[in-house]
Image (cartoon, rainbow, N blue to C red; front, side, top):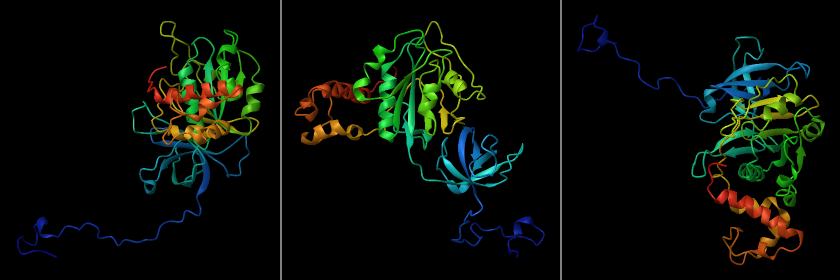
Length: 336
């Protein structure tokens, strides 16, 4: 069709296609043929997924590279997510599949960059245990990170496990004394030693390893999963800080069943997303003491008429340790 303004041979005489001329439909693809998998690592918009029902033997799983479908919109996909995948799921070199669905997450471990940062960052999904790895020396243990990691674990509904490394360099008792009243389970390791006790705590579970750079996470992963080949770093003699060797989270299958997620070393762990009023619920015995607290009581040190002040016997040390965890959230620390 032409208009009278231009001649028949003039390109401008033809009407341009109008927007939204394609008929809209409410029908959505069912993805009945989608294959289930779990995201094991993320790198620049590409998701490496291990298929969970591909018929391959456990020691020879199919691993595919995927991208996120546009249908997911802004929904994030992280390590540990259980997803549904369509497309080329052969795992052949150069193949690319699409993640079209993300299953509901059982747990979500979050952090913020700083305590005043409103943006939450999901560390990993669907883990049930947070392993806080800290060295007893080289670098020196930093209680601030341990406390904050425990707060994040309780907030996420995950079980905590304290893993103290390099016991050949220092006595673990001074560190353990601060967490024994809270009943935090722990394991102690040293360089070159047997890691069977650690493996026993991890087998059959999905565990996240979290800690500063240089504390020995990658060394521990290499001992637990011999073919992991995670790069091992050293601690700077001048700053006392480790060098980042793991640049992205990686989920690995344990030989006896279960998963571990090795995460990059962190320098800060913000807790802006944590509701301090709910933290007490992770400690049923202490929560019971707070039934008489006035409304809006934070249960911190110096709160008037706080029920935790009525603690007796062994509860006193437990309350003191709990309030230290609470203070780590409220203090607004950014470096520790």
